[in-house]
Image (tube, rainbow, N blue to C red):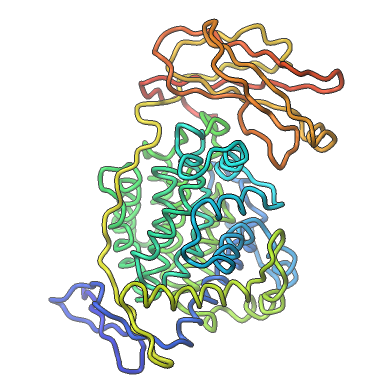
Length: 511
């Protein structure tokens, strides 16, 4: 089998030549024109938008299931125009808006405050981070596992596209912005997944060799991490089953890293918002799609779970790789009709995002040793530097679910044995809608000692995802008690389940 080396032509096109003795590697420099740079940036935004619109009807309808061929998706232009203004795009754009206003040197707190105060509703790691920020816990602590049950969730993975699109082939630049923004919401594997996305975007500016992109970008991730092992598993299964993505899908489902250990809403459930397993589905789309845009996003979608976000990532990376003008016309033409519409909860359109990313890319190119000479650009490439090892929830594993299903005023005490607990529940969404200004205060006592007064806003926008959690208790029996300090007669807080954690892994068969 022939391997590839890069050669760079004087006209700025990156080309590849075959040699039996050569191996693909990052060149020292790459020549590209300003038009080509912009074409790739636009392609990344268009690709991710089309991908999420394509998969949206199936989102989380198929947990632990492949989506069968009988489910036929045909994204029409009218559907694209109805679906494009969604959270996969406008949350990403909110970070770009901050860069447009404050520049690449904007501090983490500026990104965090803009994100937390934006009008959009959020879920999982994003919402946990918003709650933290609104209560004075700023990044990187807002995404640290000690302050959130959602450090390993998918959120930064699906918002990291912009970081690759402002970094045009420069991995150092991508890591710099990912560190500031990604730790708002995530830590450990959840953060690595977003950095991996940005790195693949960077590599897409340099080559269309997808296996090389997938492997080279992974060099950023510490080999000791579970995340690295998971991605190398997927790459190995692709090599073992190169013509049948469903076999790799089945191997993923059997893997010991494929089920949720910490997000309490997913523990012992088929529903999985974990970044690791969903990125595995992204790799399936990239590796088995063979560079074919529609086929790649369809395969990723058919892996199930977060089946709009995953094809969005695939579409964005491929869009940056092939460029805006190579995206299928049936989707590109209707996309052009919406690119100038201001995105929800932002002051920018997709076209504005192009321009901000383009200007930022040129700035990064100069900052990281490249050159801009008229219409010609020289990108100075960098070998990947392995990130520091981050391990979220060390030796903390789910042990059991204690069903409660009671009003908080009827909970007389919850007995459990372990090293941690997460209490799930809260007001109903109807109560949240009608009592936006009310904040419940719940005193939490463990083993007779008051450990917290938890603030629980009834506003859905600023809600807490868990009534309470603590993962650093001594391993023994405990009694948890909850007292609602400021109850109102017409309101209620329901406690649904408690997830108990301990220091040993117990795998329970999921329903």
